[in-house]
Length: 318
Image 1 (cartoon, one colour):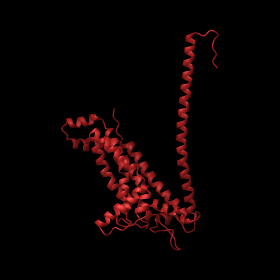
Image 2: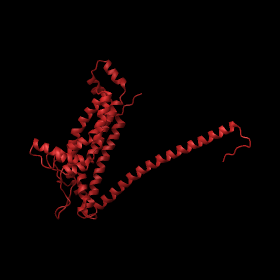
Image 3: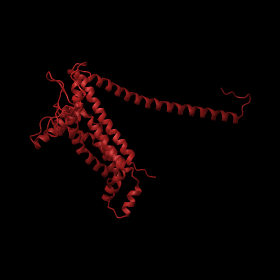
Image 4: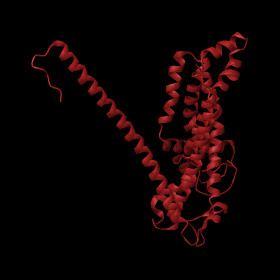
């Protein structure tokens, strides 16, 4: 505790005030660092808890006598709910998930990149300030709305194009999912393109390159790591999408590459199980955790690939 002398001078009072100010600033900084550390530890705790629950429940699934690791990863039939003989081959669900994801990526990735190039290289400031927020509004639309949009708008249009499309099909679900991930691709790619230094553009223009040449041959390669990261994030989002595929893709688990066919994805199966039709102690209920574990591994692998690409191809400019 600081004590003042009997006769304090203005210099002593000023020194005391500075000491208290420094002490308060140090305390404030320590509180901020502590809060950030707690937040980081909380996120790690949540992730660890999710992994632990998935691992425990998946282990419980494989303890049932009619379930084996070989059948789960080597079987080609998924039929856990109907009939006396149950089949737990994961590949039909993986096939449906990948089919919807490929359709969504084929639709969203090129369109999103083209939109990003336009916003970054061609549009005026006023146009960019209008179009980008309007595009990002799509990211705030609930996914169940996209599911109803696919079911009531996209599917009837596809049925007019070809009678092969049924009421539920992979194409409608994939297109709706592509619309959903379009803002992710466009926004993140546009941010990566705008981060490229202006000097690279000016140098290419000085060498006689056209606006298109500069955009495609200089700016896009320079921002490649960020663009690929945006693509992988969007693909991860498409793989984990739930409500769109649950409403529009159907409920038949089958291995197919036909976009007109009805498919079931891993997330749609989990929705079906958690509606309450299966007992919480049965093999059907436990199978949803095994499916969730496979989905987690898939998205985790894509995330790791994205991190590697960011480290490997990141461009740093002074």
